[in-house]
Image (cartoon, rainbow over the protein chains, first blue to last red):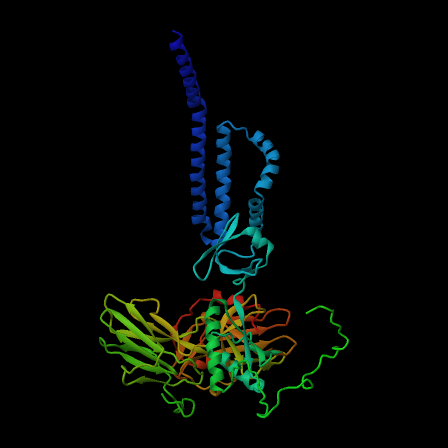
Length: 308
Length: 273
């Protein structure tokens, strides 16, 4: 008798637990999940519809910001509603979050700082999607690429080599970022070296003529040649030309070639490091003590005894 | 072909290089326009355009002629473009067009307009070649005869626009301006009503908003006249494009409408000079 009763009670209570969960909690949770899925879909639909209709005139950057904003707003409302449906009291949750924040703050310091940096980045608008930016990281490593997306945690770049780079927002807030596409024209500085005996006026004429004959180099702002430094075996010149931002790479590469050809046509030599040797007569004696400049303080220097 | 383009030219050279051409199947035609070598071939289902542009082009190279041996090999680099059709017609129109961006003109010597004076300056801007076939609104190709140099026009390096640059003599009398095949004449009338002398050292001519005319009597290509009214340093000069044809052109033939009607020119108000 007893043998058969105990298992029956156990099975009943277990069954009770399961049926309880099934009937009360589970349906609520199910409704909540369905609600958030619907919310996700609606948010998605509304934000996309907004971009397709009203936002069709936006550029890539604006449409991204608007799409994200609308999506998160609607989705958050639905998630809040579904949490309530599932029986979570939001006020309690938020109150608990006050205590939790401290713990969470320490745990997710990086993510949080990235998140806040991201908000600032989007707000500041120093660069937009489609811009080419360049930044130098702490160790001097330079990253250059086209911005393909600005997100809450990171910015995604596409480099010239078609490599996808994720840069944390924190990095962008902290370090200077070069936006190469902010203005329509760019200057190309070309550093050149010529021999000391070269006529600088002639070199300047040749260089300006090379720039003048290349249609993609802007006539105004004018190209300029300046002497910047005297090096060991050359004079260093800075040849600065301007071009349309779109043609930057092409002009920079082709100008080097044209400069070289221009120099060649006008017999201007590009120097290589030179070192002069002076020959000593053949019958020279080996150097004696007197030939070698003695160390002036040799007598004053006292060697420590026993030092080898 | 010769290098003496600028030396001897006949009294009234034939400047009308454009017009309609009839092409037999696979019978190419070739021209030399200034220093540009240009060939067109009609296939059964495609048009083929080839051109060779030398690395350096000079503005004074303004002669043109049809090349007798159209199959002669162009020097490198040759650019080829092909246009597919269901079946090609035997006619193609070569037409002149004005530049596709504004042109910044720069007088060789600066010109001053004293207070209260008015006068007309005749300047010229470079031309493009466009090829039209029947049934197509847009040209098949549209290339500059002499590729002008790019330049920047704006108050600083941040705001402004990319234009073409060209040096002009800026003649005050029309007959002093040498007729040239690949330049279109624009009369610019200045009126300085301010109390200061106005220095004219460069100016942005909104050629993409100008129509193109041909005047048989003068043998030149014309655009409509531009009027510039300068009222003082504190306000930008007012620019108006005249609707009527230029008075010195005589009877004209309408060749081409403006590339970008009117609206394009109003961003050059603030920094015209």
